[in-house]
Image 1 (tube, rainbow, N blue to C red):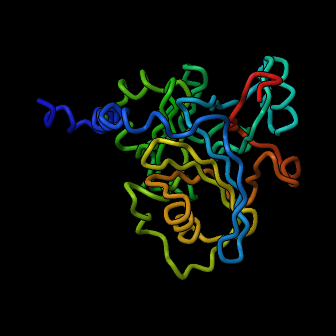
Image 2 (image 1 turned 180 degrees about the vertical axis):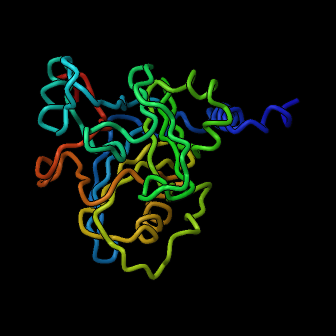
Length: 261
């Protein structure tokens, strides 16, 4: 029976979480951890958070329905709710109207549909692409095709979700479409998960190739799955350049009650 149930990508992932739970509980005791790395000649900022003990959320619009667009407005929005922003980054590729290009779920409400188109231009459509999902106390990175195959189940699990592409790492393997010798380098950010289910938001603050960024996430951060979020417009709070540049679509933030340590 278990073998039959685990043919489902969602049920397989949920079963792995349940089976591993006794070993994972001590993972991160306390608040999210912000760190800086140098990988070859690239400076990379990270924010590591455990969805079982930290609050990770996604935000797109303010109370009036206007895109928040930047970290200053997001910070003010959070403060009005009695929350402080620990760290934040842009949450995926968006269109000219600052609308997420693919699936977007916020506080359990689906605001944009799953985008299953494949043969189109742009990084979003570089295969495989995928979805970063947050349930109440777990995080998942799942291929779009797997999400579509279990659409009802994933929709019931997702409290927050953003779709982007390409996937950088799948089950510990770097996307085979990436060229190790590529000269295509830009600023890039990503969300990734390690084997314990801990989330890392990462941004390469100077140009890096897909392959090198994926290698850093896998080899240095020990991420088993990673989703590319966006390129040269990407920024992370807190960094010096956090509030420079164009407006975003949605954002991912780690938050805490105002005044909490």
